[in-house]
Length: 325
Image (cartoon, rainbow, N blue to C red; front, side, top):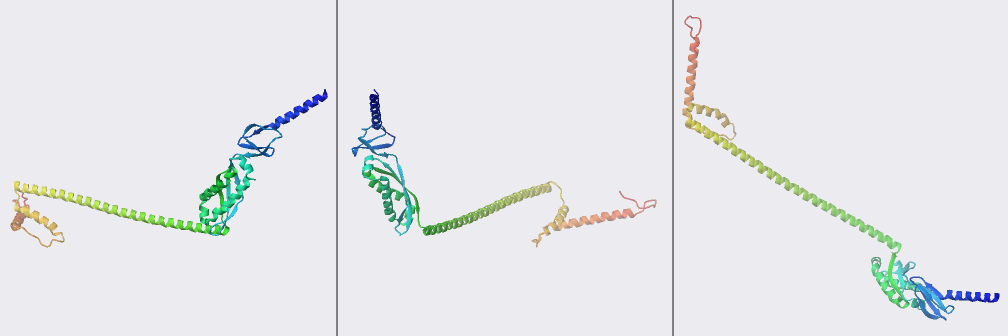
């Protein structure tokens, strides 16, 4: 009875081991290459899989995700015989696990060596300046060559990136000096252009100010002349009205020649006040007017004499002069 139990336990253990070895669970984005009796049998995809224990053997598990192959900087000689160190990263993905397993021993190492050789060929056809400024072109050429060469290995090169391109230290110092000189040159050019623009704007401002000042002076002169003309017009109208009124008064009133002569004599100082008055024109009637004025003065003297005589004569009582009213 004990022997049967032991045999049953051994049989159950064997079945458990066979069952455990028969089940193969493959993670997502992975693939297992299965061999049977040392030869390729099939490729297991992700999920639950059944294999024959002790007959089927998993040769390798392949990662189907994009892998980054980053290798140390590689030295390359440019067309102008300058050595540069290029740091490159290659993005690859396995598309055929069978070819990646059986057609190349280590596809990662193969991609690295192929990328190095291709990089030297591409950089060797460019000078230093083109190498530093043509990263996109280098990436495209590297990707095209690597993708074509790795197609039979079941590898797809999805992207190639140049992380750094380092020229020699002497070249870097020369480039820094050149860039510094270029920056100083651009700064001086910008400063000169700024001064030029400032001078132009200042001259335009002064010109505009002069034009506006001249226009303002001209407008002020026009306004002043207009005001003077209006004042002269008003003055002339006033004088004309005054002359008209005087003429009307002369016609309607009884104005003697003596009064007119007296008014003319009062105006003589004003007529002689101007510096340009060299010749005076005296109307012909002035003689008669002056004679009349002389007669007036004679009559005034006569009246004054009579008044004095009357005041000097004594009154009837002999007491003193009599005042004539």
